[in-house]
Amino acid sequence: MHSYIQTPEALAESVAAFRREPLVGADTEAASFHRYRDRIFLVQLSSRDGRTAIVDPLALPDLALLGELLADPAVEKVFHDADYDLRILDRDYRFRAARIFDTRIAAQLAGEPAVGLAALLEKYVGVKLAKEHQKADWSRRPLPTEMLEYAAADTRHLPALRDALRDRLTQLGRLAWAEEEFARLESLRWTGAPDAGDGFLRVKGARALPPRSLAALRELCAWREALAAEQDKATFRIIGNDALLAVAKALPRSPAELAQVPQLPATLARRHGPALLESVRRALALPEAELPRVERTARPPKDAAFDGRVERLKAARNRVAAELGLDPGVLCGRSTLEAVARTTPTPNDRAGLSRVAELRRWQIEVLGNALLAALA
Image 1 (cartoon, helix red, strand yellow):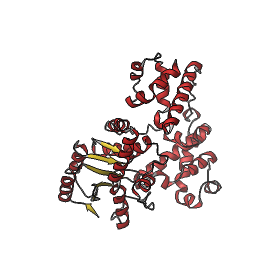
Image 2: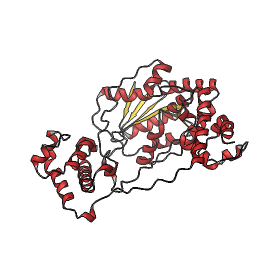
Image 3: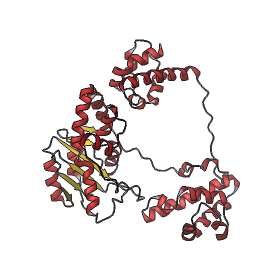
Image 4: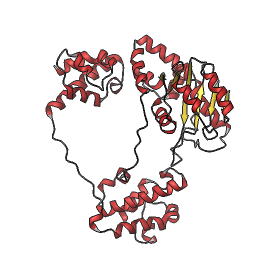
């Protein structure tokens, strides 16, 4: 069973009960697939006995009590793939979670080939999750009963999954690895930066456009952004990138020419035709000197010695990963190997490895000798 929390009194009662628990499963639901202005639309909490609360931030004027629960070091918070949840909790409320267990990280370090929540619950807990609401619009109100039940299921089984994965990590002697990773999650913060106006360059194919078409794409993207903000819709729900790119390439000057753009559906041409043509008109009217151009930055010269060190480190990493039954990227990512290659500690210099900020303590313990031997 779950309770749907919409009043300050119910929130206070629920949080007080969860703060008496040793651990709480936690999750959030946002709606970036549907809304221009994404935010947290639900927070789910579950105790080990399956008692679940679904907190509705749209109905509550103040969620400070929830923030206190997340920050309480006496209560372990169990997330699956906590990264995004922690970042948006920081962005929207400046909430910071302490004492985290992340079942996705635990599964990766246990060598699980499939680390999605549904796959793990089926394997470790014998529960099959429904999938029909994965891309649901959590901003809608009222929420149907089946959506609330789906949201509750996301956290109801997290405590049992946590127990099973913790036991598995203990058997493998890797619990300390996971705990080091969990501790680092506490420092995650929202890092989204405002668009500097060059978002149009991130459209696939934009950088291959000639300057006039690139100017049209810039105008088209700016129009779409404004309309999406006005209607609070995800930008792709206004019109897709492929259609905008095709209009920018064609530079149509009339409704008849616009209708000839093959990647633009006729319904969108009718609905947005005047705005699309106006965006193109503005681009066509720009003086040559004001057209955007893609800056081509020169690539740094190849460093054969550095590349050789990285390849030797990679081979050593891959060998140890195979012995441990781990994905090589989970054991140690390429950017970390590159940081080691830049530092070039001398043979037997484990202290030198400890100065590589990107390396975890557990990675030095498990992989340090192999990395040093590769650099020797």
